[in-house]
View 1 (cartoon, rainbow, N blue to C red):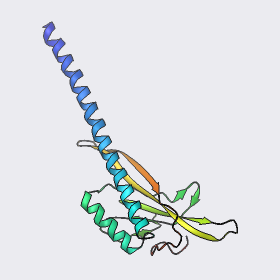
View 2: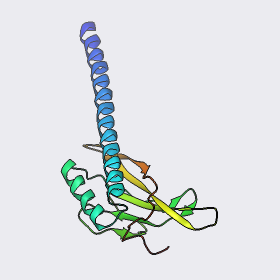
View 3: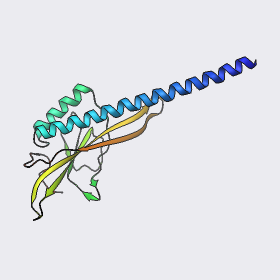
View 4: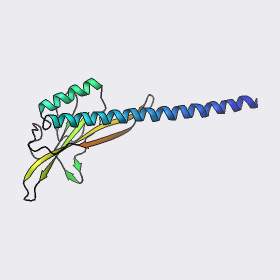
Length: 164
């Protein structure tokens, strides 16, 4: 009887470590995929000189190719200031300054000014989402990853031209 109890404890310990290792591996894979998506979106915005319709179509094709379908909610504030932003679903047109919603990624425009107060360029902050989900509990936690483009001198952004 003593040997049976000892082997069952050993089995529980082994299964616990296998579950922890598998969870860590799944989290790492999702995290690296989200970084890849963020970098791909930033590259396409810089290539098309801003988030214009050509860039958004290119991004949509890219997301469809790699199978990215994570969703999250956009935050309108950046460093305490309200910003222009768009929330984008892969198969729908972009939504400007939505109050809530589930989007594949969000883009915020941040204007750069010279000392005289004139706008000289703009750069864009891209936010993508990834989540940790379990089969029975569904979505356990949701995370965001953000990155910024380089300064774009004459940005072409069809969806962000109006002010807030």
